[in-house]
Image 1 (cartoon, rainbow, N blue to C red):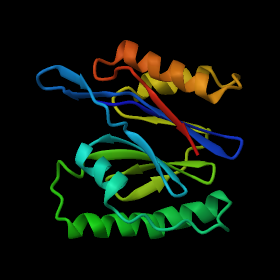
Image 2 (cartoon, rainbow, N blue to C red):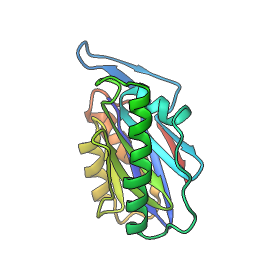
Image 3 (spheres, rainbow, N blue to C red):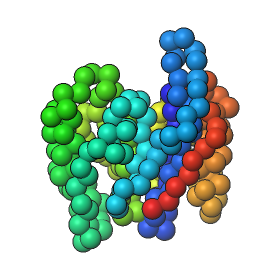
Image 4 (cartoon, rainbow, N blue to C red):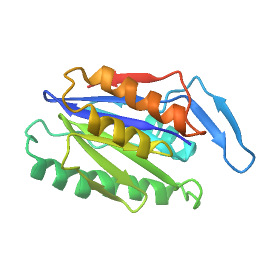
Length: 180
């Protein structure tokens, strides 16, 4: 019911999202004002799946402060999988979230790196400097792959989201794009 796209380039993370929210069982899609991507402190985050979990990430959960000395993939991996995932899992348990509320996939951008975060409470950094998630993922990933020679990450994100909106019934414009 979503398409989130991220590109890591020049020590920044560029992220874009569509506006559609849908009930795939009845085939209804509604565009919402609330973007599915946001920044908090040193994080840029996009979420797909549970709106409840996404809104908790945006407004309620305490995100651990990112130490300024984390630069390498290994340092960030240890921090995200250890500190961040443990914190989010504990906060989710404290709120007694049900199975539907924990049905999410996210992309976290931190210090110019991107990580896929799933409801299995782990984070993985892709080999390629781009990533997509949500129901439009396969269309967006194909677009990101073919536009690798392009220099402008915002143009690449717009094309990837447009491709997903063209072919996935649960993805729709307008698009929001942020950078951190």
